[in-house]
Image 1 (cartoon, rainbow over the protein chains, first blue to last red):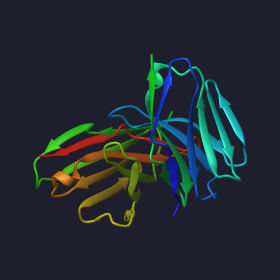
Image 2 (image 1 turned 120 degrees about the horizontal axis):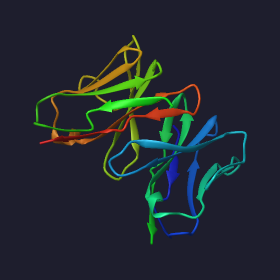
Image 3 (image 1 turned 135 degrees about the horizontal axis):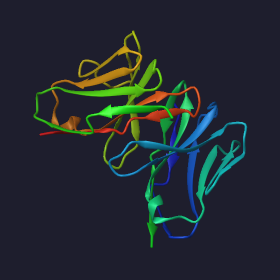
Image 4 (image 1 turned 30 degrees about the horizontal axis):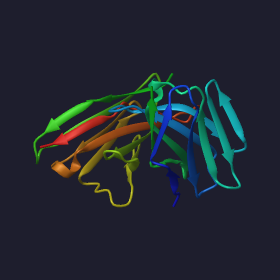
Length: 109
Length: 114
């Protein structure tokens, strides 16, 4: 089945850029998603990219997709303390969402 | 936008009792609902997929008799944890697919079995 992997932890200083990476094994997904989860809460859709795109920018967020390497990344510009959360990449696989392990982002003042 | 309302947000129950979690789709019809379980500091694991008017499809390793799923209407899907035990303590989240923007998620239910 689909395997989606992320690094577990990232720490950045406020104002710096954050880059969260995701690798996957199944390349048949039509959409690839990034979700944010704050403590004790559900998931908030941040952005998504269609599989035939290489890049998508949405305000402070930039998604890069390298289909050859099966690599997805989320860049957060000017990271703020409110961005501290867990970030999940997710892929459509057989009409289901498969999640990565999540990356805990800590933003230091 | 499309919202899934999930209740309760937090529940504590005694071992051996049953707990029902509800997810209601607001302003849209959810013919499908996904139920996920999340252990502390871990990812979301899909437990089952419910479809309105038919039996749920369970993922491998999920006990269908323990986690009863009902999807009797286009706006309501429920997950009942029967004869709960401490190892069932977890964060449960429902999700419905949308025609646009992927999926919408409930706010989650923190179940603690004591």
